[in-house]
Image (cartoon, rainbow, N blue to C red; front, side, top):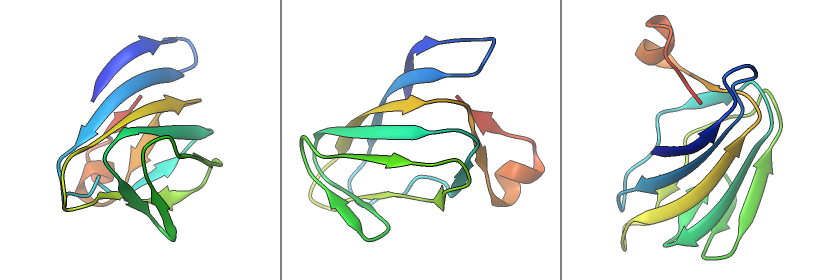
Length: 98
């Protein structure tokens, strides 16, 4: 994940992310609105299967761990209103991602 722009005061960010085929993101909770637009490849996000050009928005409190289709990597543009909070051992270590 490469952060394109970030507001240090609020934690809002715009990032470019690449998820290798068949891999999942760590399960995380949203502390603010998240909007994702698929640029290349495909992604399973709960019941939603997103392909090139598709987008999805998640409200604060949404817990998920999207997975890229096994056919190839998935590239996405991700806008976060606030950083995400990881679950499991990442949460125990206080890890956040903006």
